[in-house]
Length: 308
Image (cartoon, rainbow, N blue to C red; front, side, top):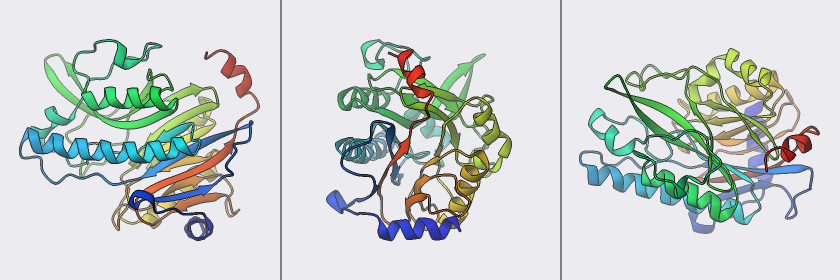
């Protein structure tokens, strides 16, 4: 049923083909004061060459450049928080010898803009995202391959990174349920993440975390108002849509699903809880961005006063 809903809203939603991207929106030009405007990217990553550091970094620069175009497009349309897909910057299936070129250290959460303080091992593209968030005055949730050294050994994590509208690191999340066929060389996270914003609390999941209902309920128990899903979903968009609908339906929280386009990993959207109600907006089409307005929980006004 979720599949039919997303197809329906895909055809009914407004679309724009600027820069070769599709823009799907279900919101007026002016945002209501009691809502938050969210945007999820439907964007694939180039991973054409990792034989050399130059080719790996070339792919990384291309991917982050394409993401920046859509983030700017979303910001122009009033988005306050923008989410990029899992492996959207680096591409998945990163070979062992390429990991040092594509991975980054992550500093702890701070109220100081990331680009204003020296942090050893932080990749330039992460600093660029922080600058972009500060320039556009939006929150950005992006993806990184996190690297740390523990007892002299390199460890890598599939990680979501939260940057606020001043370019500060506000939270990060290490994927807990790793996909055994592609992520066997990575370390799993252990703690669900919920972060505060002036417009509500957001919980974070990454791709195959969707297969663990206990993680959804943990986010709700921790006070999440919205659930972010960054994914590189396979084998078809229908499986992904069904999973996102389940999360929204059973948790009672909207799911902000950012994903890659294509036959093996298609679909993206904003899925509200409803179990059969026409409550979703999404796309199975070409790469682009989905933009939607969601109501802010009443209690958020009190939260906002403590954040600034």
